[in-house]
Image 1 (tube, rainbow, N blue to C red):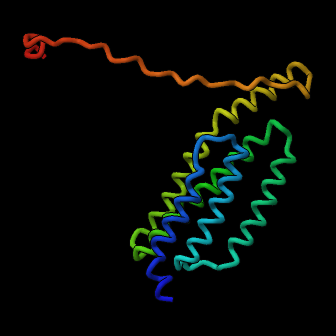
Image 2 (cartoon, rainbow, N blue to C red):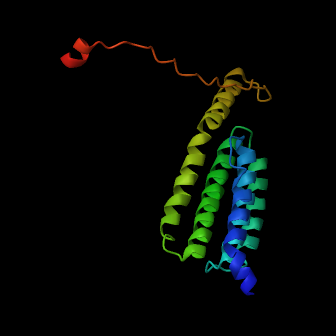
Image 3 (cartoon, rainbow, N blue to C red):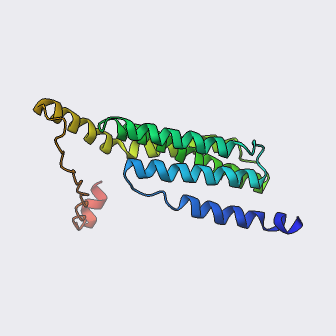
Length: 180
């Protein structure tokens, strides 16, 4: 048992790094699925690290997540991105809070209350990152309604990332510098 306690910090860090590595730009459905997995893994790691949680919680959470993803899949196409984005924000925020809590417990628990803010901030970041996808789904639904073609396919809108203009080199003379 002492060997487990000795390597507990290393195990927690390795598992959390692997679980949270999938947090990158994806579609809302993929974000929700990745968030569900990250939340489940971070819950188990948190319990293993010694967080005072009921060990049945990850099992109940897995059942809830499966039901939520199934329900979101059955929604009309225009409503799916919003449902997936909401699930992704909640689960990824929870995973970030769980990861923070696990690290806090391993380090003595001094910053455990701050983990609520970490989870909320990560959830908010995830929610706002999916805003364009939700707006595109609303626009597509409006186009379908206006055209009276419920099966009309909307083209995927590719967002162009604009690069900032390079700075214009300017020479400041000593007289101009002194005048300021």
